[in-house]
Amino acid sequence: MAPILKIIGVSKDFAGLKALHDVDVQIQEGEILGVIGPNGSGKTTLTNVVTGFLPPTAGSVVYKESLISGLPPEIIAAKGIARTFQITSIFPNLTVEDNVIAASYLRTSGSLWGAFLHTKAYRREEAKLRQQSIESLTLLGLQGKGSAPANTLGLAEQRRLEIALALAIAPKLLLLDEPAAGLNVTEALELVHLLKSIHRKEITLVVIEHNMKVIMQLCSRIVVLNYGVKIAEGTPEEIAKNDEVISVYLGGELESA
Amino acid sequence: MSRGDVLKYLVILALLIVVPPVLPKEYFRYLIFLSCVFAILALSADIIISGAGLLTFGHQAFFGIGAYTSGALNFYQGVEPLVGFLAAFVVSGVSGILFGYICLRRLRAVYLAIATFGLGAVVFLIARNWYQFTGGLTGLRGLDYPSLFGFEINSELRFCYLGLALLLLTSYFIYRLWHSRLGRAIIALRENEELARSKGVSPIFYYTVAFSIACAFAGLSGALYVHEMAVVNPMLFQFNYMIIIFIAVLVGGKGRLPGPIIGATIYVCLTEFLRFAENLRYALMGVILLIVVTFMPSGVYPFLLSQAHSFTNFIKQWLRRKGYGTNP
Image 1 (cartoon, rainbow over the protein chains, first blue to last red):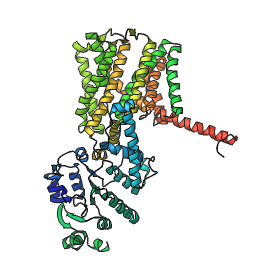
Image 2 (image 1 turned 90 degrees about the vertical axis):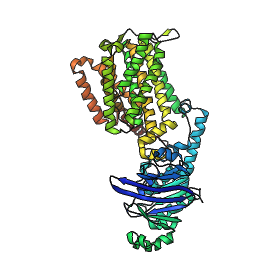
Image 3 (image 1 turned 30 degrees about the vertical axis):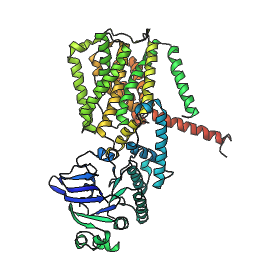
């Protein structure tokens, strides 16, 4: 399989602090890649560099043969790369359904005049949007919540809504920044099933996570970062046996997984 | 739209047509016209304030730019005022793009407010000192009344209808705007700029568009205003009009269409009915506004809505107690 995304020699400095140092990662089309590492190891910075929220200090990011590093986030999103945020990020004052509709921006084309004159094309697109948003909410187990304001949902539901919002741009590649943070064991297990079902829709996943159970059950390959440097890469079994990984970070946590 | 909604809008429309001619004084028709002017202005500013969630302190500049576009075209070139309205709409909108593009690239929140305040002040100074064009403090006098195919809008009643028609058009446009792809992109940015960007929404583009639409309608209200007075002068660029906007939006209730309209009407009526107090007029108005915002912090319109809601609930309960209830 061809790599869908190539991260080539990427570095990111914050006023002298090297958040990322010469990181090379290739993401294969159709895989689920796990990114792990202790706090401050540069996982979120890597997500931000790939999705355009931070320009890299050095190196390049290539998506499907085209250079995307340095482009603004909205252009990268339009190319088919979606993300979620470490701190759950939704449109708080809109209803759940309107959240999904607002996030479907890239899949719509309606003109202002169509809306103003209430044309047939406008009404057709509106109906399609509502329908798609209901389908998407059903897939994520949020059926029946469509008319609730998004900020009244519980944390686990907000997480799922955020994934629904990411899927609304019809991505080819989805980066999830700590999707299981703050979830209990049952909720984390539900999340694993959910992500597997998303993966079956031919979406390549990158999962940044602390929860080793989630990573081990989900990922076919794992990249380990420490202080902004990639220290290991391999299958979950290889990572679990890697002495360096165990010494810098995982230790007891891995054995319990 | 349900049948009840249609009925409601038809009743409002009928009232708007029937009420102006039967009012006892010419003066009241003038007040309705004035309310329409400031309602359009306040509604346009609310696109920026509530719609895009940005602070602006320079919206009066576009009121003035619109006023001068139509006024100067009529004064120097004899352009028909209704064509001037369209020109005012376009010129203000385009200035809004420039203004927005300068201010919105990086600035947000209070920094944006400071920048827009500065630009508004600069525009005022230019208008006041460029007297060869603007006519200085005396302005350009003797503007024509608008006329449509020979039908001249020359009485308070006709101006009143013109104002109401433009207000309805503006309200409908803004209402539909928030149900369009463009409006939703603006709302998404207001709600969560970072998240909106990750969904493909460009902040600089959509914030500028929101700004420009708001400025275009502000320009329209300015043009409407000066052709009734038949004079345009640089005082229209003054910060006073921004204060009127804030009063109308905050007292009326922001974010909902009736809010700024009610707010503008309250402002116009207060300034006129407090004339008896002479020099104390604005002090009294300040006290009244303070009382209003203290007891109705979200504005008069939301307050009235909640009162109407509890009143109908009270009636329903009373009917139920009397045994007329529909519920078993």
